Image (cartoon, rainbow, N blue to C red; front, side, top):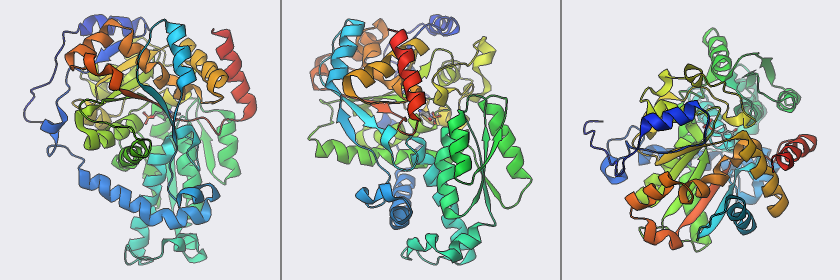
Length: 450
Ligand SMILES: *Cc1c(COP(=O)(O)O)cnc(C)c1O
């Protein structure tokens, strides 16, 4: 970035916030390197054209996807989830934290995404398809974007892809999304799992013909193991959660989908009607990509906040310290252990942190206890189960309206007289595939946390 003129409209004591993060206290940090999006356009490494290209690729594959995944037929092969209002949850949140906020509170139901039941489906499935398409063109199996993509289900295509392997390192969910789609294409699949990966995820993948390697290490190490395995095999392709631009692009396509869904619900987003979005953040790819897609559409009329566990504040540390992926939560004496297993990533993604540093609006942390409590509350009042990681966005409005930093943010962005017109979206990033007995355990933990 040439001009480093930032948009910091507030005083913020980063040293104190780092102290609180070290003490594992919940914080709200405002991005003091934010630059108005209109000033950034044109200087960014990922362009609108890249996003359009990704959207077009997903459309080309839609006929194939609906052929092989029954649950995508309703949307003609698009992998998308509903957005629904959670007004009962909103009232309960206001009661529990003793505050109130006007406007609609919506839940983006990526827990219901077809094929994988987590937000990872957006990025991982896209990357697998991108790779498969490139190989098919190289081999001459495809000659034009107009060709019939249902051929990917044919024996000729499947035989061809059998020679190739897709490798991935993951805390679990990325393995499911990339593993299931890769297996459908015909690829061999190797998934390298870190210590928090749940047994049911390993069983599920194995039942889909995926080779699972269990590592007793953290996420970063599992990713390294996967990367090494792929490097020694010329037929292997590594989906790199920490460095992949294709994953990122897959996530960005959520922007235009959300736009259409809000139009369909008569929800206006403009300068007088801001949209506030709260996104669970692990390595940063999914919240980063979604934010990027939304900012391309709404500019700074959308405000995006990233949510992390108090025990795994990796993106916050990377951005506050400006050390990005050079710093891990362990460097801060934080253990990286959390019930929010999808967010258990000790080090942020370098490319996402760099892309996000001038774009996203802030980040906050929440405790495991809060996550547990949100999980059982959502189940009780809305009859919706989401996995622990997916609860992180649910406390977002509380951070914005019930903390000093939040009030500072609203003032600095001239939002105080627009709060009646705001729409809030918590992104529920996963849950529908969690087995029922595990759901019950999580739910019981939440009841205990009350
Ligand atoms: C991976 C994941 C996230 C976070 O996505 P990142 O790209 O790692 O930031 C959030 N929720 C769930 C359920 C996940 O699996």
